[in-house]
Image 1 (cartoon, rainbow, N blue to C red):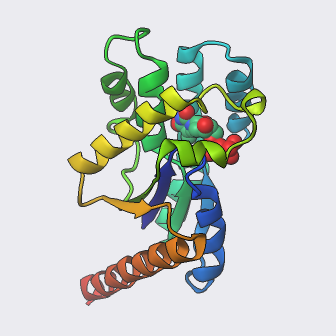
Image 2 (image 1 turned 90 degrees about the vertical axis):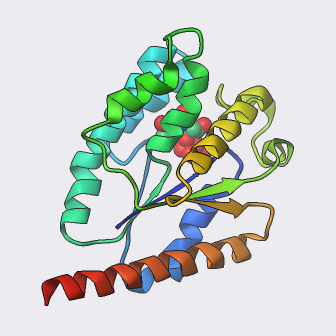
Length: 208
Ligand code: TYD
């Protein structure tokens, strides 16, 4: 089963990812992330830091995803493991749709076409949502921020995420990231556990 955590910078996703390691340890999940589950992530981070070019950046994020699938996600799912990824394909659809605006004709369509047919769609995606102003207060000072971490960009990124959630209500779960980290973590952990248990029952009845 593949679970992904999404949300704008400052939405508390990474704190949530860490908390889940404790709350779900008995299920022995594989905790992973994008970018950077493999060394390909180093080239992505470099391209982002240097602001080399939006298409270069987008395609490197996709390359990082391909390596992540090949080296971590596919092998783990093949072993029947629970995989929990901090960011995944929806980050590309949400962020690069903004950064590629005016550069490729239909950024979201272009990005989705690059993934369709070979990516693995998550079973469930938890989307951490909060006011952009609150997210900004949780980030580093202006001068140390990546170029994505600007108010206008994050507003558009969050709107993209919310549109995806409306379009795929059975996959997305919206999480109120204004709640305390403990409450958020417990809510998400309970939901993952319920899905995992339901999946286990299904897998057993298939074997019979
Ligand atoms: P992340 O590692 O979550 O942030 P941090 O460095 O604070 O731990 O992600 C790095 C940045 O990359 C973040 O601003 C979101 C962005 N990003 C994309 O633009 N596209 C993508 O496909 C992914 C995975 C991340």
